[in-house]
Image (cartoon, rainbow, N blue to C red; front, side):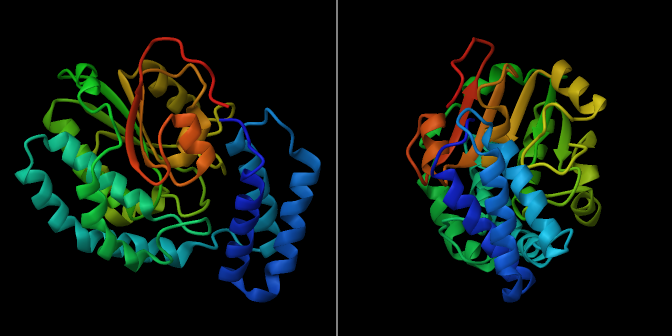
Length: 296
């Protein structure tokens, strides 16, 4: 997805939020670092995730931290673990278990901070979870994706936020129940609230999938030019890519990687427009092997 003018104030708000997590005195340094990146690198036609990566690298360096979101990530995982039993019951009672699991997983995508958001802290998800699930999918391609899920199908699952990845467990189990082989992909280094190998180990997620890979880099979403050979091979050989969240959408939309289904909340206008959906809704949007026009 290409950068849009409204992405700049959104990213700047994120930089300020990150500085406040470290200490209010760090805010001016974060603003200078972010604005320096915008001045040097903002231009129409730039992939939004790449500019965001560059900005966050500069801000983290200015803040002197490797992971300003560390506490929020742990709290997000704890909240999601508390919600997991109710989510399991919802899936078990559903007539379409895979769709139900995806609804629960997308509800976890609400765990995103430092942007215009419906929640201010991880603990607020508990009060909103049932409503998000009952709301359903504004774009629902879950039935279409089933043709890619024959027994033995290879699925690459691009994870997103902490907390959310706990609820992804429900999707992993349904995919494997259908006979799919699941490769989970997490971030190569801490960035934003996204899950890393540390979360995989702490949550025991290796037992829920067939293989775990990482993106190999500090990057918002996936840096398609710098991803490890094992990940590139997995993407080339798979039958279906499942992409969670807006950062992965920004990385993959407009590319030739197919078939891919994007599961997310549309939390900003540029992403909603690129996905062809309203804002603030849950979507499961599939791009199959047909050629698509690049999202702008």
